[in-house]
Length: 297
Image (tube, rainbow, N blue to C red):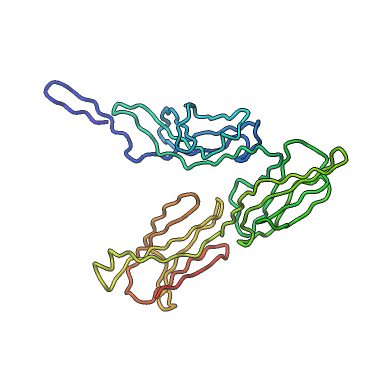
């Protein structure tokens, strides 16, 4: 807080943080894909260390919604309410309205059909177990359920089982999954199929990419600044990652000046080593025996 004296008048001016927060949307009840007529609740969170009082703006796509509370409720959801939902915090200050950055969107699908394939909401990593559930609007006596990947049959279950489990998944398991459920009704067989749902599988540690910043090359042709880009997707608490630089297969040493910027599980590390230009190799190693490398001539 700053006080300014002009003549015989004192002005009290509050300085607010200049770095805006980014709001976060989370699903507190329900799933990203629900049947029409079901309920869903979303909450807008503001990572405000000052515990300020905020009002909330809600959006579906680019259209602002009339709701203004922290909780957005979809009651008896309609198909037309499908879309990408985001929120934004807003508060009134002495210098005007202060708004956060809009949250990343949360896509909600309201399905008017009879069957939905539910996928895990958490990120799936290579080597994980992938659990899928075929959910019906009603509870008929099911006698067969089939799982498809990219339109090709993967698994078949007889009886009333609706759950599928894929163990030790790999990047080859990425694709569009759907399920078909069949049951008998009035001396005939009814069969319905879900809308395809994307299943994405992430590597624990992606292959690192070496970047050479141009400003250092321009300043001194014999030196350069190296930046290591890698995405680390291990869930917390995760073991640390060490970064090493190589020249002609000879170790230059680990990064000395690390600048980490974390966003959605990704880690960007700035390596402050200045080395002579030549063939450079970058290698990232972590403590769970995941290692990869990339070469640059």
